[in-house]
Length: 401
Image 1 (spheres, rainbow, N blue to C red):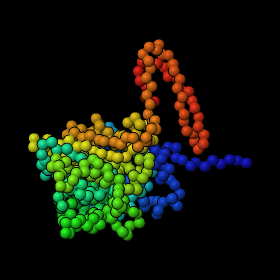
Image 2: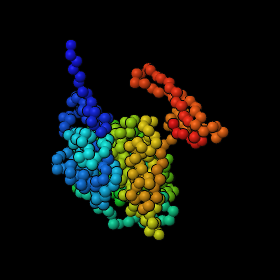
Image 3: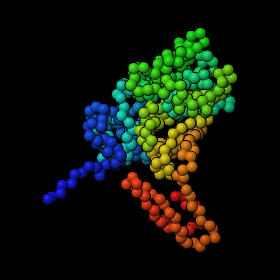
Image 4: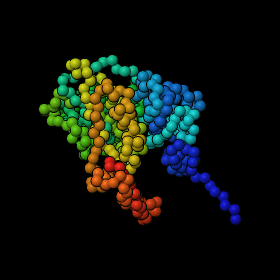
C-alpha cells in the first residue's frame, strides 16, 4: 500500500509558533479566521515604518493597522533592526511570516486576538506635546506596567479629588473613537482623572463603581470578570508597594504613570500574548515621562516596574521580551541619553528552582583539562527524562550554562 504523507507544518515559515496559531482549524477561533484581528510584533530590518506600511498597504490595503503611538519621528527612522507593534489580520500575518523578506521583515511574533471594538481605525498620528509639566528638584517618576490597577485608590491621591497619577493608560477598554485618542485603549491625564474624581465623589466618599465604570474598567454586562471590581487585584497591590502613600501626607515629588495591560494576555505564561501590549505600554510611558521638566529644564529619572516574568526562553538577552525592553531602555535605544530610565523586574517567584547556573574552573587546573557535568533534560514524552554528560574544557574563566 502506498504511503501518502500529509504536510502539517509550513517548514518555510519564519516563526513556527506563529504559523501553528494561524493555521489551526476553524473551530479553534471565535469567528471567521480571516476576519479576526491580531496584535503582533514584527522585526523590521533596514526599513522605516512609513516604507513598511506603504509596501504592505499596496498588497493588503484592509489588513494592517499601525498604532498612532508611533509619531512622525518614529515612523521616519530607519534602523538595522527594530521591533514594531501592529494590528493585522491572518492573511497579512501569514504572508509576513512566510515571505517576510519581501517586506524587510525578519520575524513575526503573534500576540492575541483583538476585538475590533477595541480599535480606533480613525485615530490620528500623535504630535509631540509642546506643553511641559514642571516638577520640583528631586522628583522621581514611578511607572507601573501591570493589570487591574485601581488607580483611584486613596494611596495614589494627594487630596480627596486630586490624583498623583499623571497619566493612566488603559489598554483593556474601548477607545473613545474621537480620532484624538489612542488606536488601542484610552489614556487619561491628571486633569481628566481629577474631573472624574470630582464627578464621582459625594459627601467626601468616592463612588468607586461609578468611577471605574466611567473609565471602562467595570461593566456588569461584560462576560469577563474585572479584577478591579474585586476586593484585591495584582496591579493595585504592586503599585501600592512601589509608590503608595497616605493621602494625608503625600510626597510632592513622586508622580505616577501607569499602564494597565489586558488581563487575558497576562494569563499567557509564555509571555507571547503580552508582548504587543508591553511595547505599547513602554512607548506611552517613555513619551509621557519626557513631558516632565526639573527646574534646570532636565528630565527627571524614571523607574519602571514590570511585575511579570517567565521561566522559558534563552534568558541571555536574545528572547523577544528581552529585546523589547532593550529597545526602549538598553544601549540600542535611540533615546537612551534623553532621560534616565531604570526597569525593575520580579525575582524570587520561582523560590529555590535553579534555572541559571555558572561553572567556574579552578585556576590551578591545567589548560584544556576537561570536566564532565550532568544535564537532566525533559524529553517530549511526559514521563521520560534523560541524562547526558557535557565535557567542558578549562579556560580559567566562568562559563554560563
